[in-house]
Length: 307
Image (tube, rainbow, N blue to C red; front, side, top):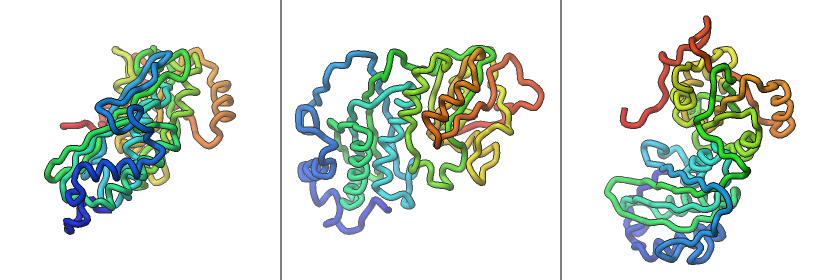
């Protein structure tokens, strides 16, 4: 759905800021509590956390993260789900969100309503209260940036650090073809899976795959080691080849390091009992040098901002 309208009466400028904020409250409904625990005060008030808190921020920008082919409701949901995927990568759960909008005055009220109703539906599904935000005007821009606060689900928060030589590399789900298939906005963040993996002592490190496995794996790989991947083991989405699985990006799956001493068959059995519809695939291991036949990731590169 195109976010702009040629009719002033149908645009956000016809409402003005105060009436637009009132409309946002209606569209969010139960997804946003009353002030000061929701929209309506200078700051939102959050309950104190008992354990480690997590915080992440991600945007959606017209022409970069979505276009006219993506429904407005799906854009709102994608914004929240991108952030939820970051929490999933650390084994966290969401507690609150704030949203900053940057809008051209020609943005359609109907488009923005769809965006907020999609965001609200996703927030209710995952139990995320939308507690505040901001609106700013900028010519030619439709963008939204969401800051998500979360908390650990257990005693451990997984990070990108911790992998060692010989550790196995595993990934959830399937990879590649995200834009072609619409997966980039239809995906389900792996919150339950991330919390489950964070409770497993054999899992040493984890992150989500958003910029492409080839690029994201660099952050998981310890200094002095390489990620030696088996091309035949990569769980490619239908119609995708190895290159697509490595560089397409916006998969929003989890990639993790599993201890070299782990009982992989036992881990696989426990995973299938917990998540029978989602694959967990061992795709390689961290090594000092690439063995014969392993993928050389230097030949691949995922998405990199400003490059």
